[in-house]
Image: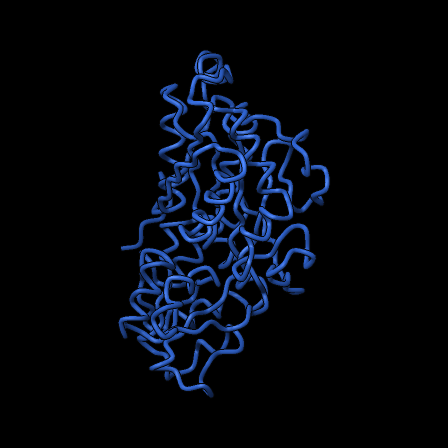
Length: 331
């Protein structure tokens, strides 16, 4: 039996009491001024090259913490509510949480950080949150199993009978907002019947894109519906057993919402990190070969923003998602 509330409990509420806000939002610099802790869902290779350069230029050590996005946000939220701050910077993929947390005064105003005013509105959620990179969604495929003539060039190509039982799909319950946005865009363009037809391909759930790529590389499946250029970095020295398609219309992708907690242990160091991310150098390190820079193609190695990008309303997509899961046969 399908559970109509199967997404319930995944999304975090940030209804913080006034007393808790008073305790948590002091913004006092209680941490080590020579160290920052960055909670980030960026892949380790990108985070490492950012941290190495930042440390060399500022003398501030960076401790990076990476967990799957919704789990990382949950950890941050629990620490904030308990007034046990750890993160100086939070980079995650949940737009709705970023909006709600900002309304609850959980983040610091970043509007006066050098470089912030140069970002266009689409890269700034508000004065607290900005997006330093966008990773377009692509379909990954096994080079060993998918002949060149079978490599998909559109979403409807996933309905090819050759792929039945061989399509891995990132479980929408792991990163609901991202998956729901993609499903919403597909339903809008291709029609909800497309999702029903896709379910007929005997989809195989994987936790997220990273284990999905590992499965493909190990010969378990032919396609993965959600993947990104950054996922290929782990296979650069392994003969590239995997390939990526070009982005399909409609294009949805990973947005990395970045903010400084109001109770960051080292707020000055955190602001320096944000300024570094916004610099030409920081943008190149963040986006080279893996993402679209908000500064455009002037940034070396930045991907080109697809002209067919879809921008579904996050709340509407999440609210409608249970119907999409029913169509896909996901209980």
